[in-house]
Amino acid sequence: MNNPDRSSPNEAPGVLMRVDACKEMALGHLKRCVSLAIKLREKGVPIVFLTAGDGFSETLLQGLCFRYEILGSDINSANDCNSAIRTAEEYSAKIIVIDSYEIDAVYRSRLMSCGYFVVSIDDNADRDLSSHVIVNGNMNAEHLSYPAVDGVSKYLGIKYLILGPEFWNPDAVSDIESVHNVLITMGGIDHYDLTSKILSILDRIDSDFDITVIIGPYYDNEKSIRRQVSAMRKKVKLVTSPTSLYPYMKRCAMAFSAGGQTLYELSVLGRPTIGITLWENQAGNVNELSKMGAIYGIVYSASEEFNAMLTEKASRLIHDMCERKRISRISSLIVDGQGAERTYNAILESYREWVSLRKYKEIT
Image 1 (tube, rainbow, N blue to C red):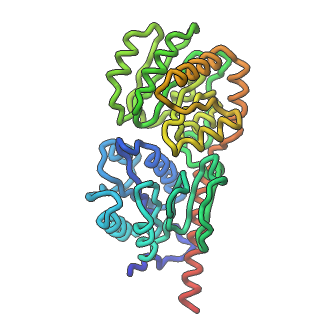
Image 2 (cartoon, rainbow, N blue to C red):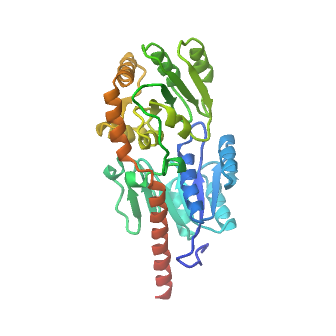
Image 3 (cartoon, rainbow, N blue to C red):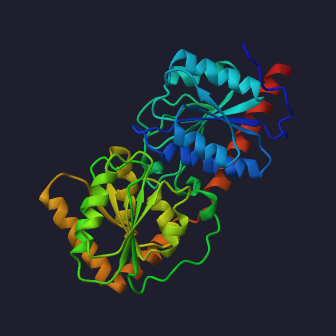
């Protein structure tokens, strides 16, 4: 059995980030781990990523000067777990952070039995998360049912929402008294070609504004979007796979977003947003923010009712300055951007307690 932990409990341990991005799972997990890794590196913690081969992942990690290894086997296989152990040994990592719906309890338990401190970043509480620490920074996290297991520390709720460094202490953003620019971002992939649908709706609204569209790295509907743009009266700017959405969020007066972490980033900046639930794991974010009056929430469906509702909400936000200001005020109070700092402190505190307990057991 490996015993990777022979350091002082006060020493900053190395961390392995086990996370993937691809067309099927998009970018949310990877970007969340990158944000946490930036905070850890800022604190002097050595970081290495282990990720399935993906061109965008490699470009992103290279651009941020992170060390990384490419997984040469199927995700969640025995070879995947072997690679995690081998990479942790090579880079002297003592903590392994896993952000994945694919990696099962057997994989996590094996890492723990090999002497690694395992942290699971989660959204759903819908499976066994064998770990020492569970982090869920979503609005609905405290309402989810995580099993009460001895020795597992849980850090749940919006205080532990991990956002990128641009959102830790954001600059002043443009006003929302008039709608000068509308942002559309559906995440890493736009399965239902919602961008084209929203563009069509916006072009029919009688108001003078331009539109910024983010095209994610896994979009297979770019041709459809460009066809729609070519037929429009309004000015549209297309932005392909930016490293950060922050500059585009700053200058927009309102936004359309899928129901992932981008909703929270827009909230930090007080941007009135129509949040669309595309997948079950986004429902908690959209429902909770909508109940608080921080966004207009809507669940996607391939129906005329959905189109009508989307049109009505868009028109209302564009034409009602008081409503935009109300949403902006509420949303900007919900998220403070300090979740990465709190998550770093929580993981390190739990790790040090774990090390001290192990050393005490060895003595006694």
